[in-house]
Length: 415
Image (cartoon, rainbow, N blue to C red; front, side):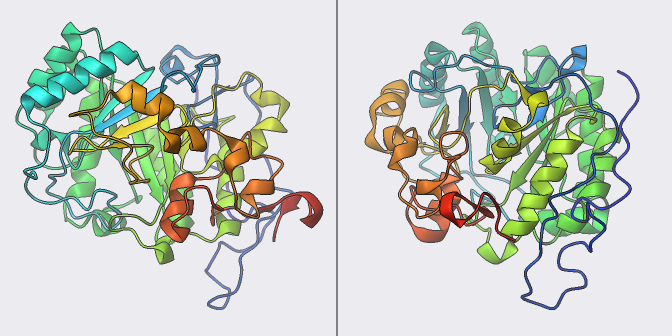
């Protein structure tokens, strides 16, 4: 696999030697993102781009599972389909989108309805299909559904929670049923930080053990990290730990204040800008793919970087992406809970193609915020529609995480 890239000696938010955000400044003082950040180490060959636009290194065989879809027509069908199989979960994560509960809800799809959904998804032929939750392992028919999907020639990945249900035997059984990969969350570099975030002691050690079991079973491992004010200063440590877990991908999610998550837990726009720049540069040396979720602003770095040629289709909320809730509601994203239909009565592909909400989300000229609506990068980026809705109630409004100011206000981060 080759030598692993060391994390930069400086912190990711002090690329010009400045302090990490929020450490030495007075409360409420704005943090700034340096423009002249150092690039850690040498560059690899030109990278692919992952499904949300962050460049991913190109050639090693272990990375062939990254999403290099370059000619996908996102108006015709979704590249990514996510199904929330249940809202039941034993954890109490402070940022949980689903506001998960300890028991399944009575409104969740039953076994026959779940099979009907899988049949619809198989007909769509998405590039990526993920079953998530809550904790999908709380669903008693999960393994039967994996077998049914295999008979449909539908590849399925799983995003479980690190609970006692995530046993080695369960992972090996998933591998035997043709599971395409497993995503496990890691939100801190040690037990104290991660377990506090996840709301249950012992989750950190269980997470590391599960990652090793996934790799031992021969399954591709994705490690997912949520960026918040609580862990942003320790992302370099998280990255160093992720390297030891041998994943194919590090998925870095920027908090959207929905479910249990709160806006005050989000990082400041200037901090997000600096983190995204760090991730962009780090992707050239990381021994695994790096992708972002709900941070399409990273694409600004891609279009100005010759090394990022050959990007994939740009995927965002409702644009190449569709989410089906545990109750069967069809959303543009799990973080954008505006129902456009329900799979019990509606055709998933028809809703994706033709519902006015989805069509507007795929139209960059429909953006009406004073920043996103007039941004020179609105066709490449478009901002997080989920975050715009969560903060302002308008899915076509401005993404409050973005630090970029376009046009007459200047062509650079507003710091």
